[in-house]
Image (cartoon, rainbow, N blue to C red; front, side, top):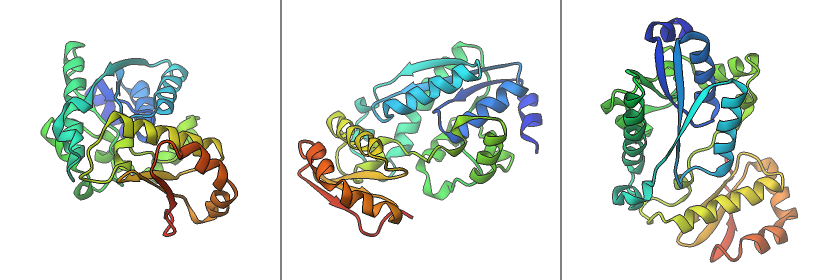
Length: 248
């Protein structure tokens, strides 16, 4: 089904908006197709500040109505205990907050940016979306990540080439308790490396150790910036290591 026709049939959409590639394009399509749309950004300790800034920038450029919901996900022990299905509990918290606000604003449909490339078997959070009856227009209309990037570029969205960015909690090893301190350390470390010129990388946490994962072509940059990285991160981690298996 054509995405724009799908959205026209819904008429009004409350959109779970992260500022990433998928939800950005879906917001654009909703604005072109729906009579009314509101983008709901849920601000938690799991989202770095740059994601919030990107979301605000895009909403402003598209002249979209964006509402910010502040949520303390760290109050939920099922989230902070960090089990393998942590994402399920986190999504429940986030989308219940969106559903409450959306229904207060008179919306029937709540949508998210899940696309046709996303593997449901590998994403516990998608189970929560199904249970809460959240619709995924991009997925239902067969749009995969590559197509969404192309369409986003054609639409002039600055997010078209934005690297995929999973929430900060994914950097903490499963089973290790999630704390605000660990999340802030991760955000600081990744912000610092980004400032050095690294792209599409991760700084993972395992028992107090930082494990830096970069693409193969950026390994020389890690060596070149070794002293700067050690100096900047040494107060946040017991040790700083480089994953030689690299990111694919």
